[in-house]
Length: 602
Image 1 (tube, rainbow, N blue to C red):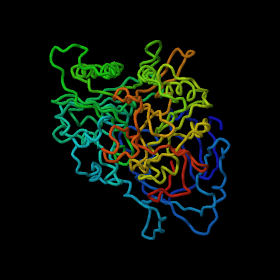
Image 2: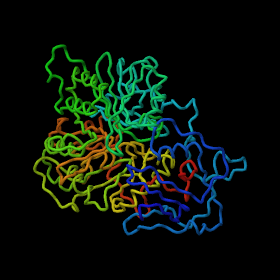
Image 3: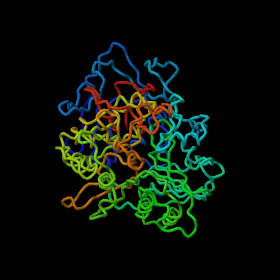
Image 4: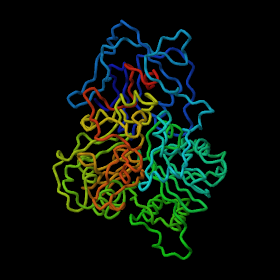
């Protein structure tokens, strides 16, 4: 299909494609569906905090759902029958449902009357639109936060709590209110780095006694969205804003980190959640929570307080890259604390073009450098697959050799200095990205796809990519129906029992996040800010050079002490013939979601 505007007819109804470019640069693709809701009051305005077009559509559909209805005994409309098929590439734009489904009628939930047609028999969760009283409610439990911290040792890797799953699967999980709890320290001031920020919601996550403490919010908003963010922050005298420098087109401030200064010391939290209610409600998210770092004694050496992973120096270098006076005071604070107990490596991206030794400080070349220098050889590791799991996808190029199976794959598959090089075709790569059915049957239903902003314009250019795709399945953590916003990458043994390394990060599968080579490989170009932490066996005193995999994340601690809790099921399950990757900006009208609704982006 050409890049210009054009229209197609398919099983979704008629739609019109805009001329937007790569997914990471998408301005949104608009559709005119032939399936029209009946007249209804206009939906409420979108949330005031900035966000992607996909998230705005999700909010709209939650606020004004389109109900699925079935009319027995009628043939499908001819207009809905044709498919845009790409079966030869393992992917097509059709619905995964059979074409012989009965005709559907759609109407707005807001326009429903008491003479309502019986809904399909689907297990339903609670309704989408939270009322005012429920907006700040969190999953209830009676856990002692210190017990939760202890359960996370030695890795200090946690999942967020999820509303609507069995309570046992929230044991050992954290909500943002837990992280900000006074039980973790007496807060003096804090910094929140993030992409999508609801200031009013964020302030309410702090305990009442901390809500007037200095809070610095680091963001990447510009122009109208920046003005809106300033307006949202204006009522709070203790809140200051710091705009991250974003000189590269289509770059984002995607880092998600908290710096929490206490009377008792300092804590660093690196995670994957936006600072909005939805990201802490029914999604799978990851958190690395540092130890409480004590203050160094007066007169300590400048080298005192560094960890074996060089974490403090790398964190200072990352903050320095912002070139912000507001963050310089925080680099001084970090230097005054003892971070020597840290066992993870920092893997960050910052916008710019980097050459020479600077090239190895950021992006996938940073990961490559650590894996080369800090990992030892493992027998037979050449056959160990790399697993990548993410919630958004950028443009990879017309074939796998352009980036994915060249520079990016070389970085991911580096391990020590002497690994044997195999042809790309023999290097297994498994990518986990939710299918349409994953989203449809999720706790949130189709609106969960608002956090999976893979756009049609990008997907059509790279059907080859979808042959690497595997479903989201997380029975081990009770989160198969909690769509992933977490991003993880790892090197796994073929029998799924051992890990060479594990990375949790904000970085999706995109050149903008990880960087791409220019000038015959001498220069690395990165568009966005990203941040993650890398777990290596050598930093956790594993003489075997690997982590054992914890097969059941919520098994009793004594059953698998020291095993790494991979949050989804292994081995990943490959897409079957009918599975399709979730694409946010096309309609799904042939089958209802877990709330009895369809998805018709406007």
